[in-house]
Length: 266
Ligand SMILES: Nc1ncnc2c1ncn2[C@@H]1O[C@H](COP(=O)(O)OP(=O)(O)OP(=O)(O)O)[C@@H](O)[C@H]1O
Image (cartoon, rainbow, N blue to C red):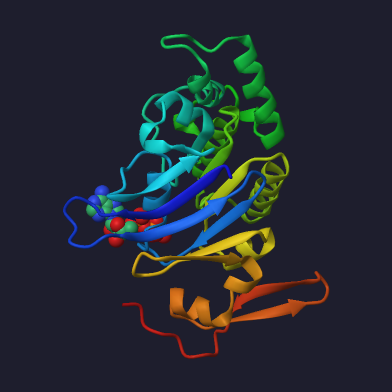
């Protein structure tokens, strides 16, 4: 098992109660797990704990069987990469230079990326269809393009696990589906992929595991087609949805049931 999380709890320093409570799940290489939850449920917080940015108050995280708490930091960085939701550009690196920075865990201290690292970055940009951005300044590209560059930086890291925080967030309609396909391809290549999303339909398209992070900070995990149903969507989002089979595309989709009474957000 490439990623194992055991009874993980997290509380922000000034908060009175934990955001995450006894979260446990396992993810194997080649598996996809999507995480659904309302705004503020703690999805990004969970990814930050897994990405070794936040230290849990209790519980353990194992990467390839090794406890993250005692693992060499560079080794951990080679195993897991994190694509955050928001990224503020500070320096005007070119997109190519920004992406090649993902090679850092593979380089020696103070070692600069070499020809091979740039070749990997160029190949990844080609695969992502963003080669045209290579020489543009990272500070002068759109939000969606920046997200694609962040994804590129995560892939050149050649980790075992990729964490995506709402990867379709800034993407146009077409690029959302391309992103879903990319996630699927990454899993087919053997990466374990964990991604948060606000789109139940994206989780259904991807299949695999889906986890629901509820308002109490507890995570329920199951197969996407079992976990995503009208009851659980009402619990998370306090709205009515319909899960309907569309014969033309031979799959079930999740759509708003606009005619039903909508619950109030607390
Ligand atoms: N640095 C912080 N200090 C204290 N509380 C925080 C901090 N960052 C986030 N929170 C709180 O923790 C909760 C969970 O935040 P988080 O960003 O993990 O939610 P999320 O599920 O990713 O939300 P969204 O879907 O809106 O992105 C929120 O209530 C948020 O206000």
